[in-house]
Amino acid sequence: MRTLDLTNGNGMRVRVLEHGCTIVGVEVPDRHGRLADVALGFSDASEYRRRHPYFGCVVGRFGNRIAGGRFSLDGQTYQLATNNAPGGTPCHLHGGEVGFDQRFWGVERRPGAGAGELCLHRVSLDGEEGYPGNLVVSVVYRLTDENALEIEYEAQTDAATPVNLTNHSYFNLCGEGSGENVLGHELTLHASRFLPTDAGQIPTGELRPVAGTPFDFRQARPLGERLHEADAQLLNAGGYDHNWVLDAGGGALALAAEVYEPVSGRVMEVLTTEPGVQLYAGNLLDGSCLGKSGRAYVRHGGLCLETQHFPDSPNRPEFPDTILRPGGKYRSKTVYRFGVR
Image 1 (cartoon, rainbow, N blue to C red):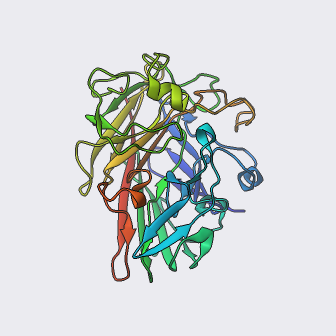
Image 2 (spheres, rainbow, N blue to C red):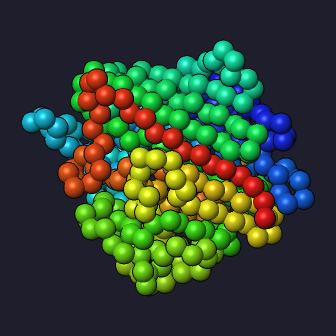
């Protein structure tokens, strides 16, 4: 398996694996100019072929959960794999048993792209993991001299199908080998509402205001500040594993989130064209995965900010539409922009 490097003029480096379209490393400076890898992952590329917590990969066709692994489209019902069962309730998660995260992607360096750009692509055949239609997908990773990692997704299909692509990188701005958790990271989310879920972590359909709840990150505060409150939503999910409804609404590229780590001074801004972002606080990391540094990744050892459409959207017509049809084109862009303070 090949690992390819993206570099910029500031010494920043992003490493990408063709298996799973996976980001395996993101090296960025702290306020003193010292580089550290802030993305969780493995030192041995073969580890990505085993079951793991989706470190750095692109998930699809449908990122996040679909209730019961079932949806109806144009009068036909489709049954997908039920590869996840929160609270004992089976659902379809991140594309199924062998989703995009466990597929090999073609790789190309486009003419004139330089050392900072890489394009990966694959064809997901009709019936793959139970989804209809042949889906042609491309993902472009681009590292700019402004220390921004841009991710652009495109897809086309020959039959109507749900599409909801995202990257599942786990970040720790202390450095993945620091041994620190992310509960002291200060988080801002530009979202006034979030999606509460049932015991199976499927959205109930309510868009609940964050005001007065532990889900209010409209002003920066430490991720762990209210994590252990006796809130039913936190107890159901074992922490933060919910989708926030972004105030920008999706469509145009807009600021969705900011993460600041006070000791290193590192800042990560997240911009996206998507209407939602799933915050996952590494609730299920349990020390069983050894990272690139040789340290075990313990609970809350990294956080994910997965820009996306809403979970279970194929079964929720009131949610933003995730059905791609022939003649249309799926386009999505997310930017992880790094700096210091």
